Amino acid sequence: MIITMGDSLEYMKTISNKHFDIIITSPPYNMNLRLNKKNDGYISRQIVPEISTKYDNFSDNLSMDDYEEFLYNNLVEMIRISNLTFLNIQSITGNKRAVLKVMGRLNEYVKEIIIWNKVNSQPSIQSNILNSQFEFLYVFGDNPISRMFTHVNFNRGTLSNVWDIKKSRSKIKGHKASYP
Image (tube, rainbow, N blue to C red; front, side, top):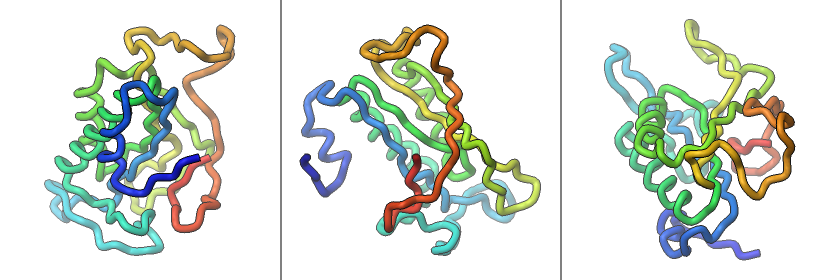
């Protein structure tokens, strides 16, 4: 096993096309970008360790345009270097517009969309906001014009695009955003 520390985007640029069979990623969700008091623009939320700090060295509050470019540039490289790329992301205030713009820009590479149903919804911090019970897994690559996967092992009718997997607490110290 080789572990490389550094900027993942810069490192991916050194890797040859389709080097990996699969990449599974869950980038920061930009959860610290919030609506301003007038609800007509965005502001950076005060960083509160108990609520909004998921990463030790990343504030998770890029502008919407910067987040879009961050996500797009990383996905372009992942799609280039792997046969299949799974992007796990939840639609929230701080990323929703950027994620949808990126999906539009990369629509020709989207093979499938899977819903991760976390079984129990996470209560919203504020009133009048729906509780969140699912996240998206966007699948890119492997002849995206077809929904059929190659090099897999499941029979017709045996695997749904809604996955019921109960969310669990992170067991990784310093990484509160891990998933099962």
